[in-house]
Image 1 (cartoon, one colour):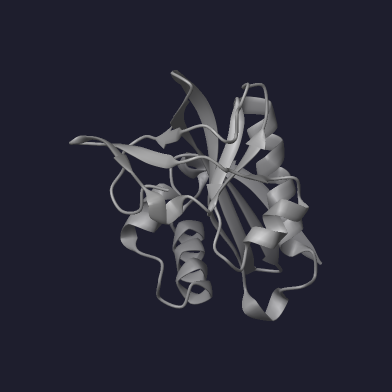
Image 2: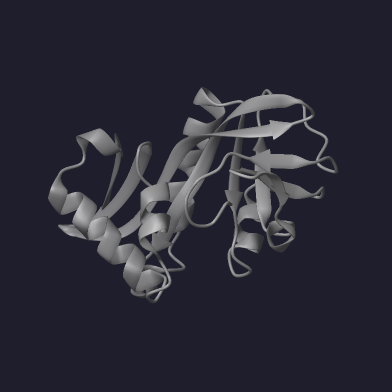
Length: 177
């Protein structure tokens, strides 16, 4: 039996945060940086447990994306992972359902950057690939992020979007998207 916990970073104790970080390090095979972890904090987490073991995690944090001259309050999905030996059982779908509920209830749109492996999963859930150019508000000004053009997905909400237009994310350390 699995238990799902939806809670804010502020309400997670050290053991849960440590377990979530360890899970992400394991699932991403050492390719989950300190900046990636930092991006996952400060919002709502979805933890999936079997007994006392953490087998899945995802979070959604607030970011500002700019589109057509408007700053949009965006629920940005981070750190979605399910332990390798627990995949293909619907766990990622349960985690995403909660993150999507938060995105639709609290934000103008949802957004995420998908790996090549995850793109089909998100598309099947109704996330739409951004078709226009992506950029970041970097310290030196707006900078194109061509390497991210094909990986950004949005979950439309109340914001009017032209998915062929430009989309600019706020600055943060590490990966922009």
